[in-house]
Length: 254
Image (cartoon, rainbow, N blue to C red):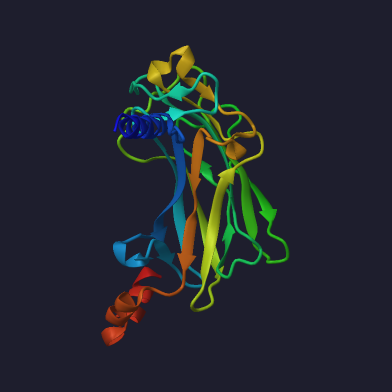
């Protein structure tokens, strides 16, 4: 009986250790659509987490960031980095560097224009991105979009509960065959994803991500892109089609 109990306690100890040491990124960056043809994105513009588009749509988006939850542990550095606190006047995203792109064989294709950085990410090193041809598709990716805060004065985030935008941009849907999806990838740009301050900007909380951060076992940054689709879920499609609703909505958005 004692052996069984010892085995159970050992198993519980292992599970507890795993739960305590399980880590995740400290900073999250995403591409979030905000308008389609100058009209605010609505719940009806989504289907199963994908943005519904058609050829010719112009989609406005924001590059947004958000800290992870207090208590998050990251194991990339030695010693581990733990998000203990966020001070509104001291902590914030310092620099972000991303590529916004698609695969050449993506069914739904888009064409990007350069981004616009928002204050305070307009310091030295800031860049609106470089338009780069996507193979022979006739479309451009947007590489190395960079937002950098000046060292002085350094602006704190003010709030940490919501996603905040550090840059804006747009893309035009150039190919959108029926029953198709297309992924917009948001990835770390060459040279590393950037840096941020946390824990009241104390030395141990100033995180500068290494260049190979995206390939690390536990990267500082997470990146979330966007999936586009040309077909809404069946129920939504039926409701919109009824009485010509789908046509009316698309005309209104144009």
